[in-house]
Structure formats: C-alpha cells, structure tokens
Image 1 (cartoon, rainbow, N blue to C red):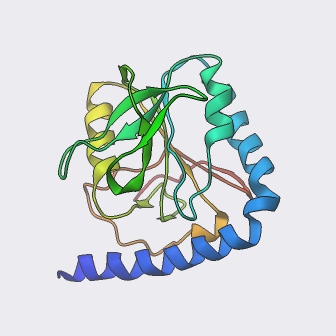
Image 2: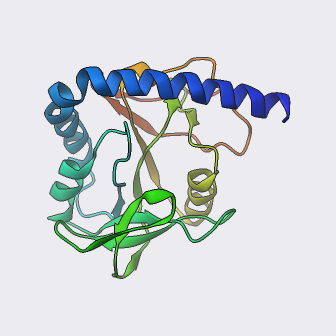
Length: 193
C-alpha cells in the first residue's frame, strides 16, 4: 500500500466513525431540516436532470429532495456496471420497483438511462475547498470527470457537518464538489491553491 493509499484509508476510517456518530445522534432530529436545506438548494435548478442516491448505512437520505425534484424533471440513480467504469444513471420515480444492485445499493429494476446535470454525491469526508473522500472505488471521480468533459455539471455533496476534515489526502484525479449541504448550512467551496 502506498503512503497516499494508507493516508486515505486512515482518513476514511476516521470519517466513517464521525459519520456514524453524527447519524446516530442527529439523523431523526435533523432529517426534515436536512431535506429542506437540500430541497432549497435544488429549487434553483428545477427541471434539470438530477441524480441522487439511495442511502445506505449512515448516509444521509436525500429521497425527500429527490421526490420534490421528480415533480419538475428527470431523476436518476447510480448504477455500477463494473470496476473501473463510470456510473450510469437509471431513471427513478417515487414508488418505482427497486432491486439490489452491486454493493447492495438499491437501483430501479428498469427504466431509461439519463445524463444528469446535477449530482447529489454521497461521501465519507469533505473539506471547505470542495475536496471529497469517497469509498475508494473512484466511481464518482470517473463519472464527474466524464460528465464535466461534456458540459457543465453541479456536484453537490450531502453530508453531516461532522464529516468535514481539513486534512484530506487528495490526488489530482479526485473531482471537487461545487456545493456541500450539511445540517449547519450550505458551503460554497473556496478555490484550491
């Protein structure tokens, strides 16, 4: 394991613990507030194709904001086609039939593929410069790089404030977040040096 990989693994483990504690301590109390903040941010982008995710473990559930967005435009969920590949996004609607996909993520059983212009991105940790530490598979980094090469895309991190870490071990291929929504408010990242 390289030094960077070891630092990322250590940062990931610490961030998982912080997220789990934040989820246990605030999930029920903050769920409505977090959804309202996210929905407020998304209101400025109504009608644009949006991709969310189905929350797993201690991730924050973006479903209420996705449901609101689905009334105005297409919403999709990420589908993993295989290691080393970018994500694809299958159309989702409230109440659609879901199945278990890779990594036990719930995905629509069928539907059209969409190309999102806004991604609600799950994460393990973030910094105020838009840095994001994910699960280590590189799926969102590859996906965002490809989408951004084709046109403008808004990457919106959805996290607990406790997931902030100003010492993230990042590398050039890590794609930055454009906004971060937490229970403490919306963070507009500072420019990276």
